[in-house]
Image (tube, rainbow, N blue to C red):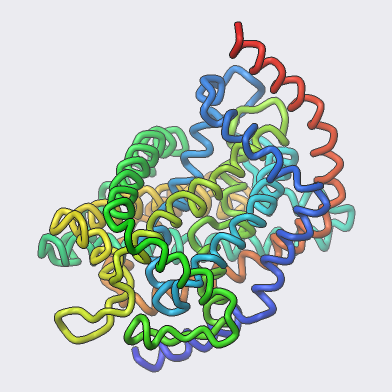
Length: 473
Protein backbone atom coordinates (compact mmCIF):
# COMPACT_ATOMS: atom_id res chain seq x y z
CA UNK A 1 0.00 0.00 0.00
CA UNK A 2 2.87 2.39 0.80
CA UNK A 3 4.36 1.74 -2.64
CA UNK A 4 0.99 2.41 -4.30
CA UNK A 5 0.65 5.66 -2.34
CA UNK A 6 4.11 6.72 -3.50
CA UNK A 7 3.31 5.99 -7.16
CA UNK A 8 -0.02 7.84 -7.01
CA UNK A 9 1.72 10.78 -5.30
CA UNK A 10 4.26 10.99 -8.15
CA UNK A 11 1.50 10.98 -10.76
CA UNK A 12 -0.43 13.59 -8.76
CA UNK A 13 2.62 15.88 -8.56
CA UNK A 14 3.13 15.56 -12.31
CA UNK A 15 -0.45 16.29 -13.44
CA UNK A 16 -0.71 19.22 -11.03
CA UNK A 17 2.62 20.69 -12.11
CA UNK A 18 3.21 24.14 -13.63
CA UNK A 19 1.55 23.22 -16.95
CA UNK A 20 -1.81 22.41 -15.34
CA UNK A 21 -1.72 25.50 -13.12
CA UNK A 22 -1.01 27.72 -16.13
CA UNK A 23 -3.75 26.02 -18.17
CA UNK A 24 -6.37 26.37 -15.44
CA UNK A 25 -5.69 29.94 -14.38
CA UNK A 26 -4.64 30.97 -17.89
CA UNK A 27 -7.95 29.82 -19.37
CA UNK A 28 -9.80 31.78 -16.68
CA UNK A 29 -7.74 34.88 -17.49
CA UNK A 30 -8.32 34.47 -21.24
CA UNK A 31 -12.07 34.11 -20.78
CA UNK A 32 -12.26 37.03 -18.35
CA UNK A 33 -10.50 39.32 -20.84
CA UNK A 34 -12.47 38.08 -23.88
CA UNK A 35 -15.73 38.53 -21.97
CA UNK A 36 -14.67 42.10 -21.13
CA UNK A 37 -14.74 41.23 -17.41
CA UNK A 38 -18.53 40.77 -17.63
CA UNK A 39 -18.55 37.91 -15.05
CA UNK A 40 -16.97 40.30 -12.52
CA UNK A 41 -19.02 43.33 -13.55
CA UNK A 42 -22.28 41.36 -13.51
CA UNK A 43 -21.63 39.49 -10.26
CA UNK A 44 -24.14 41.74 -8.46
CA UNK A 45 -26.78 40.96 -11.09
CA UNK A 46 -26.03 37.25 -10.76
CA UNK A 47 -26.37 37.29 -6.96
CA UNK A 48 -29.63 39.23 -7.21
CA UNK A 49 -30.95 36.67 -9.70
CA UNK A 50 -30.07 33.77 -7.39
CA UNK A 51 -31.88 35.33 -4.44
CA UNK A 52 -34.99 36.31 -6.43
CA UNK A 53 -38.28 34.43 -6.07
CA UNK A 54 -38.26 33.72 -9.80
CA UNK A 55 -35.13 31.56 -9.43
CA UNK A 56 -37.20 29.11 -7.36
CA UNK A 57 -39.86 28.65 -10.05
CA UNK A 58 -39.97 26.75 -13.34
CA UNK A 59 -42.06 29.30 -15.22
CA UNK A 60 -39.34 30.79 -17.42
CA UNK A 61 -38.26 28.47 -20.23
CA UNK A 62 -37.73 24.70 -20.26
CA UNK A 63 -35.86 22.33 -17.95
CA UNK A 64 -36.14 19.67 -15.24
CA UNK A 65 -35.63 21.74 -12.07
CA UNK A 66 -35.70 25.41 -11.03
CA UNK A 67 -32.59 27.60 -11.53
CA UNK A 68 -32.09 27.74 -7.74
CA UNK A 69 -32.38 23.95 -7.41
CA UNK A 70 -29.85 23.46 -10.22
CA UNK A 71 -27.43 25.80 -8.43
CA UNK A 72 -27.97 24.09 -5.06
CA UNK A 73 -27.38 20.66 -6.61
CA UNK A 74 -24.17 21.97 -8.19
CA UNK A 75 -23.18 23.52 -4.84
CA UNK A 76 -23.99 20.23 -3.12
CA UNK A 77 -21.24 18.72 -5.24
CA UNK A 78 -18.77 21.54 -4.50
CA UNK A 79 -19.36 22.68 -0.91
CA UNK A 80 -17.84 19.72 0.89
CA UNK A 81 -14.59 18.51 2.35
CA UNK A 82 -12.66 20.99 0.20
CA UNK A 83 -14.11 23.87 2.21
CA UNK A 84 -13.17 22.39 5.58
CA UNK A 85 -10.37 19.87 5.11
CA UNK A 86 -9.07 21.15 1.76
CA UNK A 87 -8.46 24.69 3.01
CA UNK A 88 -6.64 23.40 6.08
CA UNK A 89 -4.56 21.03 3.94
CA UNK A 90 -3.64 23.85 1.56
CA UNK A 91 -2.62 26.18 4.40
CA UNK A 92 -0.55 23.46 6.09
CA UNK A 93 1.21 22.18 2.95
CA UNK A 94 1.38 25.51 1.11
CA UNK A 95 1.39 27.91 4.04
CA UNK A 96 -1.24 30.58 4.78
CA UNK A 97 -0.41 32.24 1.45
CA UNK A 98 -2.22 29.37 -0.29
CA UNK A 99 -5.48 31.12 0.65
CA UNK A 100 -4.59 34.06 -1.61
CA UNK A 101 -4.04 31.71 -4.54
CA UNK A 102 -7.39 30.09 -3.80
CA UNK A 103 -8.97 33.56 -4.10
CA UNK A 104 -7.12 34.36 -7.33
CA UNK A 105 -8.05 31.05 -8.93
CA UNK A 106 -11.67 31.58 -7.83
CA UNK A 107 -11.87 35.09 -9.32
CA UNK A 108 -10.83 33.86 -12.74
CA UNK A 109 -12.78 30.67 -12.08
CA UNK A 110 -15.96 32.77 -12.21
CA UNK A 111 -15.45 33.14 -15.95
CA UNK A 112 -14.65 29.46 -16.41
CA UNK A 113 -17.71 28.35 -14.41
CA UNK A 114 -19.96 30.80 -16.27
CA UNK A 115 -18.70 29.70 -19.69
CA UNK A 116 -18.95 25.95 -19.19
CA UNK A 117 -22.45 26.23 -17.69
CA UNK A 118 -23.71 28.58 -20.38
CA UNK A 119 -22.47 26.29 -23.15
CA UNK A 120 -23.99 23.24 -21.46
CA UNK A 121 -27.46 24.83 -21.58
CA UNK A 122 -27.02 26.12 -25.11
CA UNK A 123 -26.15 22.67 -26.49
CA UNK A 124 -28.20 20.42 -24.18
CA UNK A 125 -30.56 17.80 -25.57
CA UNK A 126 -33.47 15.70 -24.27
CA UNK A 127 -33.21 11.94 -23.65
CA UNK A 128 -35.86 9.27 -24.22
CA UNK A 129 -37.40 9.93 -20.78
CA UNK A 130 -37.82 13.63 -21.56
CA UNK A 131 -34.98 14.62 -19.21
CA UNK A 132 -32.33 17.18 -20.09
CA UNK A 133 -28.84 15.88 -20.76
CA UNK A 134 -25.98 18.30 -21.19
CA UNK A 135 -22.50 19.20 -20.06
CA UNK A 136 -19.10 19.63 -21.70
CA UNK A 137 -19.30 16.19 -23.37
CA UNK A 138 -22.53 17.16 -25.18
CA UNK A 139 -21.14 20.63 -25.95
CA UNK A 140 -18.01 19.10 -27.50
CA UNK A 141 -20.07 16.68 -29.58
CA UNK A 142 -22.50 19.29 -30.93
CA UNK A 143 -20.49 22.54 -31.06
CA UNK A 144 -17.44 21.54 -33.06
CA UNK A 145 -17.64 21.32 -36.85
CA UNK A 146 -14.94 18.64 -36.81
CA UNK A 147 -17.11 15.83 -35.44
CA UNK A 148 -14.24 13.37 -34.95
CA UNK A 149 -12.41 15.90 -32.78
CA UNK A 150 -15.54 16.84 -30.85
CA UNK A 151 -16.55 13.22 -30.27
CA UNK A 152 -13.07 12.32 -29.05
CA UNK A 153 -12.97 15.21 -26.59
CA UNK A 154 -16.50 14.41 -25.44
CA UNK A 155 -15.67 10.75 -24.88
CA UNK A 156 -12.54 11.59 -22.87
CA UNK A 157 -14.36 14.13 -20.71
CA UNK A 158 -17.25 11.74 -20.01
CA UNK A 159 -14.83 8.91 -19.19
CA UNK A 160 -12.80 11.06 -16.78
CA UNK A 161 -16.01 12.39 -15.22
CA UNK A 162 -17.27 8.88 -14.47
CA UNK A 163 -13.89 7.99 -12.92
CA UNK A 164 -13.78 11.29 -11.02
CA UNK A 165 -17.27 10.71 -9.66
CA UNK A 166 -15.92 7.73 -7.77
CA UNK A 167 -12.96 9.76 -6.47
CA UNK A 168 -13.66 13.44 -5.77
CA UNK A 169 -17.40 12.86 -5.54
CA UNK A 170 -17.54 9.59 -3.65
CA UNK A 171 -14.53 7.98 -1.95
CA UNK A 172 -13.03 11.23 -0.69
CA UNK A 173 -16.34 12.36 0.77
CA UNK A 174 -17.17 8.97 2.32
CA UNK A 175 -13.68 8.84 3.82
CA UNK A 176 -14.18 12.23 5.43
CA UNK A 177 -17.59 11.27 6.82
CA UNK A 178 -16.39 8.02 8.39
CA UNK A 179 -13.25 9.65 9.78
CA UNK A 180 -15.20 12.54 11.30
CA UNK A 181 -17.81 10.30 12.93
CA UNK A 182 -15.15 7.94 14.26
CA UNK A 183 -13.06 10.73 15.82
CA UNK A 184 -16.06 12.55 17.30
CA UNK A 185 -18.33 9.69 18.33
CA UNK A 186 -16.17 6.56 18.19
CA UNK A 187 -18.33 4.83 15.57
CA UNK A 188 -16.36 2.23 13.50
CA UNK A 189 -15.83 3.22 9.88
CA UNK A 190 -17.54 0.13 8.48
CA UNK A 191 -20.75 0.93 10.40
CA UNK A 192 -20.75 4.48 9.05
CA UNK A 193 -20.05 3.13 5.58
CA UNK A 194 -23.11 0.89 5.68
CA UNK A 195 -25.41 3.68 6.90
CA UNK A 196 -24.36 6.32 4.35
CA UNK A 197 -24.41 3.73 1.55
CA UNK A 198 -28.06 2.87 2.28
CA UNK A 199 -29.06 6.54 2.66
CA UNK A 200 -27.32 7.52 -0.55
CA UNK A 201 -28.98 4.73 -2.52
CA UNK A 202 -32.46 5.64 -1.23
CA UNK A 203 -32.07 9.25 -2.37
CA UNK A 204 -30.15 8.58 -5.57
CA UNK A 205 -32.76 6.16 -6.90
CA UNK A 206 -35.18 9.10 -7.05
CA UNK A 207 -33.06 10.84 -9.70
CA UNK A 208 -32.44 14.57 -10.11
CA UNK A 209 -35.78 15.56 -8.51
CA UNK A 210 -34.98 13.70 -5.28
CA UNK A 211 -31.36 14.86 -5.22
CA UNK A 212 -32.29 18.51 -5.83
CA UNK A 213 -34.96 18.48 -3.08
CA UNK A 214 -32.48 17.25 -0.49
CA UNK A 215 -29.73 19.60 -1.72
CA UNK A 216 -32.01 22.66 -1.68
CA UNK A 217 -32.55 22.15 2.06
CA UNK A 218 -29.25 20.75 3.33
CA UNK A 219 -26.78 22.95 1.43
CA UNK A 220 -28.04 26.49 2.25
CA UNK A 221 -28.97 25.56 5.84
CA UNK A 222 -25.60 24.02 6.70
CA UNK A 223 -23.64 26.66 4.77
CA UNK A 224 -25.26 29.49 6.74
CA UNK A 225 -24.83 27.63 10.03
CA UNK A 226 -21.14 26.92 9.35
CA UNK A 227 -20.50 30.48 8.10
CA UNK A 228 -22.05 32.05 11.22
CA UNK A 229 -19.95 29.84 13.51
CA UNK A 230 -16.80 30.66 11.54
CA UNK A 231 -17.48 34.40 11.68
CA UNK A 232 -17.93 34.14 15.46
CA UNK A 233 -14.49 32.50 15.69
CA UNK A 234 -12.93 35.25 13.56
CA UNK A 235 -14.59 38.05 15.55
CA UNK A 236 -13.53 36.59 18.90
CA UNK A 237 -9.95 36.29 17.61
CA UNK A 238 -10.00 39.78 16.10
CA UNK A 239 -6.76 40.79 17.85
CA UNK A 240 -4.86 38.12 15.90
CA UNK A 241 -6.59 38.83 12.58
CA UNK A 242 -4.24 41.63 11.38
CA UNK A 243 -1.10 39.51 11.89
CA UNK A 244 -2.89 36.53 10.31
CA UNK A 245 -3.73 38.59 7.22
CA UNK A 246 -0.13 39.82 6.99
CA UNK A 247 1.12 36.21 7.01
CA UNK A 248 -1.44 35.26 4.35
CA UNK A 249 -0.39 37.98 1.89
CA UNK A 250 3.35 38.00 2.61
CA UNK A 251 3.71 34.24 2.28
CA UNK A 252 1.72 34.22 -0.95
CA UNK A 253 4.20 36.42 -2.83
CA UNK A 254 7.48 36.63 -0.90
CA UNK A 255 10.19 34.72 -2.82
CA UNK A 256 11.54 33.20 0.40
CA UNK A 257 8.30 32.75 2.29
CA UNK A 258 9.38 30.81 5.36
CA UNK A 259 7.12 30.40 8.35
CA UNK A 260 9.48 28.41 10.54
CA UNK A 261 10.06 31.18 13.05
CA UNK A 262 6.41 32.21 13.17
CA UNK A 263 4.52 28.95 12.74
CA UNK A 264 6.77 26.34 14.25
CA UNK A 265 6.82 23.34 11.95
CA UNK A 266 5.71 24.89 8.65
CA UNK A 267 8.23 25.85 5.97
CA UNK A 268 6.95 26.46 2.44
CA UNK A 269 7.92 28.00 -0.89
CA UNK A 270 5.90 30.27 -3.16
CA UNK A 271 5.53 27.44 -5.68
CA UNK A 272 4.07 25.22 -2.97
CA UNK A 273 1.72 28.02 -2.00
CA UNK A 274 0.51 28.42 -5.58
CA UNK A 275 0.28 24.69 -6.23
CA UNK A 276 -1.75 23.83 -3.13
CA UNK A 277 -3.83 27.00 -3.28
CA UNK A 278 -4.92 26.47 -6.89
CA UNK A 279 -5.29 22.67 -6.57
CA UNK A 280 -7.40 22.82 -3.40
CA UNK A 281 -9.32 25.80 -4.74
CA UNK A 282 -10.27 23.87 -7.88
CA UNK A 283 -11.03 20.79 -5.77
CA UNK A 284 -13.42 22.95 -3.77
CA UNK A 285 -15.23 25.03 -6.40
CA UNK A 286 -14.59 22.82 -9.47
CA UNK A 287 -14.33 25.84 -11.81
CA UNK A 288 -12.76 24.67 -15.05
CA UNK A 289 -13.54 21.00 -14.45
CA UNK A 290 -16.91 21.19 -16.22
CA UNK A 291 -18.77 19.15 -13.62
CA UNK A 292 -21.20 21.89 -12.56
CA UNK A 293 -22.20 22.36 -16.19
CA UNK A 294 -23.82 18.91 -16.17
CA UNK A 295 -26.22 20.00 -13.41
CA UNK A 296 -26.73 23.45 -14.94
CA UNK A 297 -28.08 21.75 -18.07
CA UNK A 298 -31.09 20.55 -16.06
CA UNK A 299 -32.15 24.10 -15.11
CA UNK A 300 -35.34 25.73 -16.36
CA UNK A 301 -34.32 28.88 -18.21
CA UNK A 302 -35.16 30.97 -21.25
CA UNK A 303 -31.54 31.91 -22.02
CA UNK A 304 -28.25 30.03 -21.53
CA UNK A 305 -26.44 33.20 -20.48
CA UNK A 306 -28.95 33.87 -17.69
CA UNK A 307 -28.38 30.47 -16.08
CA UNK A 308 -24.66 30.76 -16.71
CA UNK A 309 -24.58 33.81 -14.43
CA UNK A 310 -26.68 32.03 -11.79
CA UNK A 311 -24.42 28.96 -11.73
CA UNK A 312 -21.34 31.18 -11.73
CA UNK A 313 -22.24 32.33 -8.22
CA UNK A 314 -21.47 28.82 -7.00
CA UNK A 315 -17.75 29.65 -7.21
CA UNK A 316 -18.34 32.88 -5.28
CA UNK A 317 -20.27 31.20 -2.46
CA UNK A 318 -17.94 28.22 -2.31
CA UNK A 319 -14.51 29.85 -2.30
CA UNK A 320 -14.86 33.59 -1.77
CA UNK A 321 -17.28 33.04 1.13
CA UNK A 322 -17.05 29.60 2.75
CA UNK A 323 -13.37 28.82 2.09
CA UNK A 324 -12.40 32.34 3.19
CA UNK A 325 -14.22 31.89 6.49
CA UNK A 326 -12.38 28.62 7.14
CA UNK A 327 -9.04 30.17 6.17
CA UNK A 328 -9.44 33.30 8.28
CA UNK A 329 -10.63 31.22 11.25
CA UNK A 330 -7.43 29.17 11.02
CA UNK A 331 -5.19 32.22 10.48
CA UNK A 332 -6.69 34.25 13.34
CA UNK A 333 -6.77 31.38 15.86
CA UNK A 334 -3.00 30.90 15.90
CA UNK A 335 -3.23 27.09 15.59
CA UNK A 336 -1.37 26.83 12.26
CA UNK A 337 2.00 25.22 12.91
CA UNK A 338 1.13 23.94 16.39
CA UNK A 339 1.32 20.28 17.38
CA UNK A 340 -1.33 17.97 18.79
CA UNK A 341 -1.26 15.66 21.78
CA UNK A 342 0.62 13.08 19.68
CA UNK A 343 3.45 15.52 19.05
CA UNK A 344 2.67 15.79 15.34
CA UNK A 345 1.72 19.02 13.53
CA UNK A 346 -2.00 19.69 13.29
CA UNK A 347 -3.24 19.33 9.71
CA UNK A 348 -6.41 18.60 7.75
CA UNK A 349 -9.61 18.34 9.74
CA UNK A 350 -7.75 18.48 13.08
CA UNK A 351 -6.41 21.91 12.15
CA UNK A 352 -9.88 23.26 11.35
CA UNK A 353 -11.32 21.70 14.51
CA UNK A 354 -8.58 23.31 16.61
CA UNK A 355 -9.35 26.71 15.06
CA UNK A 356 -13.07 26.49 15.85
CA UNK A 357 -12.38 25.04 19.31
CA UNK A 358 -10.15 28.02 20.16
CA UNK A 359 -13.37 30.00 20.70
CA UNK A 360 -16.22 27.50 20.86
CA UNK A 361 -14.44 24.84 22.94
CA UNK A 362 -15.48 21.19 22.41
CA UNK A 363 -18.59 22.43 20.58
CA UNK A 364 -16.29 23.71 17.83
CA UNK A 365 -14.98 20.22 17.07
CA UNK A 366 -18.47 18.76 16.99
CA UNK A 367 -19.67 21.58 14.72
CA UNK A 368 -16.86 20.98 12.23
CA UNK A 369 -17.52 17.26 12.41
CA UNK A 370 -21.23 17.67 11.69
CA UNK A 371 -20.42 20.13 8.91
CA UNK A 372 -18.11 17.61 7.26
CA UNK A 373 -20.74 14.87 7.45
CA UNK A 374 -23.55 16.96 5.92
CA UNK A 375 -21.41 18.75 3.33
CA UNK A 376 -19.69 15.54 2.26
CA UNK A 377 -22.93 13.58 2.02
CA UNK A 378 -24.55 16.26 -0.15
CA UNK A 379 -21.42 16.19 -2.34
CA UNK A 380 -21.90 12.46 -2.86
CA UNK A 381 -25.46 13.12 -4.05
CA UNK A 382 -24.50 15.96 -6.40
CA UNK A 383 -21.60 14.08 -7.92
CA UNK A 384 -23.71 10.99 -8.51
CA UNK A 385 -25.81 13.05 -10.92
CA UNK A 386 -22.66 14.34 -12.67
CA UNK A 387 -21.28 10.85 -13.08
CA UNK A 388 -24.63 9.37 -14.09
CA UNK A 389 -25.12 11.81 -16.95
CA UNK A 390 -21.55 11.21 -18.14
CA UNK A 391 -22.20 7.46 -17.95
CA UNK A 392 -25.46 7.93 -19.86
CA UNK A 393 -23.49 9.74 -22.57
CA UNK A 394 -20.96 6.89 -22.81
CA UNK A 395 -23.71 4.23 -22.82
CA UNK A 396 -25.66 6.23 -25.42
CA UNK A 397 -28.87 5.88 -23.41
CA UNK A 398 -30.37 5.93 -19.93
CA UNK A 399 -31.31 2.23 -19.61
CA UNK A 400 -28.18 1.36 -17.58
CA UNK A 401 -28.43 4.32 -15.20
CA UNK A 402 -29.86 2.20 -12.38
CA UNK A 403 -26.79 -0.05 -12.54
CA UNK A 404 -24.54 3.00 -12.20
CA UNK A 405 -26.56 4.25 -9.22
CA UNK A 406 -26.20 0.94 -7.39
CA UNK A 407 -22.45 0.61 -8.10
CA UNK A 408 -21.87 4.24 -7.10
CA UNK A 409 -23.64 3.67 -3.79
CA UNK A 410 -21.63 0.52 -3.05
CA UNK A 411 -18.36 2.37 -3.69
CA UNK A 412 -19.35 4.74 -0.85
CA UNK A 413 -18.65 1.87 1.56
CA UNK A 414 -15.23 1.24 0.00
CA UNK A 415 -14.32 4.92 0.26
CA UNK A 416 -15.30 5.02 3.92
CA UNK A 417 -12.53 2.53 4.76
CA UNK A 418 -9.61 3.83 2.61
CA UNK A 419 -6.52 5.82 3.60
CA UNK A 420 -6.97 9.58 3.27
CA UNK A 421 -3.74 10.34 1.37
CA UNK A 422 -4.46 7.82 -1.37
CA UNK A 423 -8.01 9.10 -1.86
CA UNK A 424 -6.94 12.77 -1.92
CA UNK A 425 -4.21 12.11 -4.50
CA UNK A 426 -6.47 10.00 -6.71
CA UNK A 427 -9.07 12.77 -6.62
CA UNK A 428 -6.48 15.35 -7.62
CA UNK A 429 -5.48 13.24 -10.62
CA UNK A 430 -9.08 12.83 -11.77
CA UNK A 431 -9.55 16.60 -11.45
CA UNK A 432 -6.69 17.24 -13.82
CA UNK A 433 -7.80 14.65 -16.38
CA UNK A 434 -11.33 16.10 -16.42
CA UNK A 435 -10.09 19.64 -16.75
CA UNK A 436 -7.90 19.15 -19.82
CA UNK A 437 -10.60 18.44 -22.49
CA UNK A 438 -12.96 20.94 -20.84
CA UNK A 439 -10.42 23.76 -20.91
CA UNK A 440 -9.53 23.02 -24.53
CA UNK A 441 -13.24 23.30 -25.35
CA UNK A 442 -13.60 26.62 -23.49
CA UNK A 443 -10.57 28.12 -25.24
CA UNK A 444 -11.75 27.10 -28.72
CA UNK A 445 -15.31 28.37 -28.11
CA UNK A 446 -14.32 31.56 -26.26
CA UNK A 447 -15.28 33.77 -29.22
CA UNK A 448 -18.77 32.25 -29.37
CA UNK A 449 -19.17 32.69 -25.60
CA UNK A 450 -18.16 36.36 -25.83
CA UNK A 451 -20.68 36.98 -28.62
CA UNK A 452 -23.55 35.47 -26.62
CA UNK A 453 -22.58 37.43 -23.50
CA UNK A 454 -22.64 40.75 -25.33
CA UNK A 455 -25.97 39.83 -26.92
CA UNK A 456 -27.53 39.27 -23.49
CA UNK A 457 -26.14 42.45 -21.91
CA UNK A 458 -29.05 44.71 -23.03
CA UNK A 459 -31.47 42.33 -21.27
CA UNK A 460 -29.43 42.67 -18.07
CA UNK A 461 -29.52 46.45 -18.27
CA UNK A 462 -33.28 46.39 -18.84
CA UNK A 463 -33.87 44.07 -15.87
CA UNK A 464 -31.69 46.23 -13.61
CA UNK A 465 -33.86 49.24 -14.43
CA UNK A 466 -37.00 47.22 -13.63
CA UNK A 467 -35.53 46.18 -10.27
CA UNK A 468 -34.79 49.82 -9.42
CA UNK A 469 -38.31 50.85 -10.42
CA UNK A 470 -39.86 48.19 -8.15
CA UNK A 471 -37.53 49.22 -5.32
CA UNK A 472 -38.77 52.80 -5.33
CA UNK A 473 -42.45 52.09 -6.07
